[in-house]
Amino acid sequence: MKKNILICFALFLVVTMTATAQSVKIYKDCDYNGESFALYVGNYGYTQLGNVGNDNISSIRIPQGFTVTVYMDDAFRGESRTFTDNVPCVPADINDKISSIIVTKSGGSKYNKNTSNNTSYNRNMVTVFKDSNLSGESQSLGLGYHDYNGLGVGNDQISSIYIPEGFTVRVYTDGNYQGKSETYYSTVLQMYEINDQISSIIITKTSSNSNSNPSNSHNRKKYR
Image (cartoon, rainbow, N blue to C red):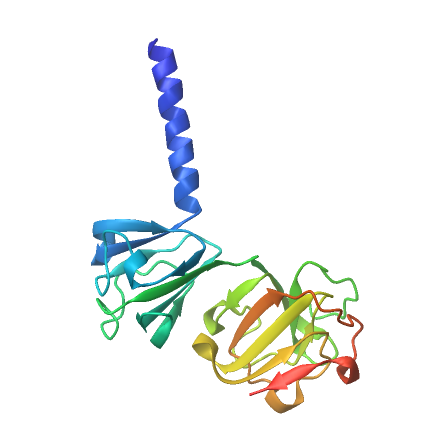
């Protein structure tokens, strides 16, 4: 009987830890104190923030691979901030002012300092390069949001991008997905207008038929 109780308790701990690793947790006070509420991947308006409530968030636990974008107004409007790591105390200018949240899970990233040209690319991830023509230091990025502090090749350092078929890449000249932006649907050998100016990236899957061969001439893009 005692052995069965121990086994059940161990299983409970495993399930609890797994659930925690799959969700973001918001807290009413700094340092992960006070009332808390778990948020899974999705969009949350001011009425969906559980027992923590609207304009009451002061700290956020963010498991590895998750991205949390918080907004000061409902319906994902107003001033926003994006976090990819634990926030023991939300910055003063938005502390107790958060009204809506978007939680996403990234496909991860892999940094490669090898500067030799490599024509064998991971077709399940986008790869950014420090130099043109898919050369220099590189980093493979999965689906999701990638801000300047998560770019292993460095902020304002990207000159070319390998984009597998079926992926859409939106790049921004400022952090937190702000500033000028361009959207790409196929591999970019040279960034031209925003070369060495990229600070944040959003990667999504698209159903459109794109050309994965390295060619700027076949690359559909939108400029803002």
